[in-house]
Every structure is written in structure tokens, then in C-alpha cells.
Length: 237
Image (cartoon, rainbow, N blue to C red):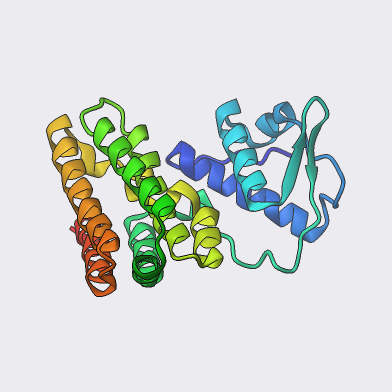
């Protein structure tokens, strides 16, 4: 029997498919170690395009439910008890989702940057500076992918400078989805708006960097909170 679904967007289609496949895995319909239906079979079942199915499988892999063995197929993985906190791409679709993640980052990174100011070494300063230079280099570029990676690298470098591996591990678990414009493009409706916004982000990063270099933890914390607060206000507009 067909499981065709007709929601409004490709993103929503893949999310619904992910949820249905997870339900089949958790119910035991798809057992651990078993191969799930092929791409063509899933396309026929859900009556969607190949790109939607591939997006759903990619999401299932990122969540740890399946693994793909090249040339063989995709198989259900054994779930661990520790896998009880999952932040999927599909769960970051709305403005409220983005704002909630920014609030989480604010509490986490405000402390990380304070510790980084106390513990940073030259290798950490060099990494932050390299990320700043990379970001600045991509500001006037037509594509924003470069600034997203540079932005992410800057925040990871701060976490590393805290010398608390849990900050690093958690931010790396979240991945580039911690950068709001990696998920939503509304702030970049024109090249002029995009460049103005990115210059403001870069200015904030430089202020944070300078406070860390000066080992002024209180100022660094204040700068980080101000930086993330601006993003929250922008997305709440």
C-alpha cells in the first residue's frame, strides 16, 4: 500500500519520512542488522523524488539509526542507551527552533569564552585569528558557505581554548547548524544586506578575540552574550 505524502516543502517531506522510518526501526519492523528498503523502493513507497529520499537517509545516518555500506545498502544500527539527546536538521526548521538553539549557545559559550580568556595559549590564538581572516576573506563573496565554516571554526577555536573537552565535543556534535544563517537565509535577501550583516558579525568576533587575547574574561563573556543576543533579536523580528 502506498505511503504517499504531500506536505508543502521538500524539507518537510524528508522530515516526515525520517520520522516514519524511525518509527519502523523502533517498533522492530526494521530490525537491527537488517537492510532497509532501497532508494527505489522508498521512492515508490512514499511517492517522492530521489533527492528527498537521499536527504532522509542522510538524516537517519546523522542520527545514528542506520549505516550505509557502499555497494551493499543501508542497514539498521544498534541503538545505544546514551543516544537520548538528538538534535536533527529536521528539528531546526522554524524561527523558534533557531532562537532556542541560540539561547542554548549563549549559556554554553558565555562560560566557554570566559575560561578561554584564562587558559588560551598561542596555538588557540592562532586558530582564532586564522578563522577571523578566513571569515573576512569571504565577506564579499557571492556564496556564504565560506563564512559559515569560518564562523563555526572561530567558535570551535574558543571552545578548544577553554581546555574543557566537553565544550568542544558538544559544539562539534551540533556542527555547523549552530550558525543560524546555515539554516535560514532571510537575513540575506540582497547582497548589500548580506555584506552589512557579515561585517557586523566580523566586528563582534574581533571584539571577542581581542578580549580573549587580553585575558579579560568578564569582557569576553559580555561580548559573547551581546553577539548572540543580536542574532536572537534579529530572528525574533
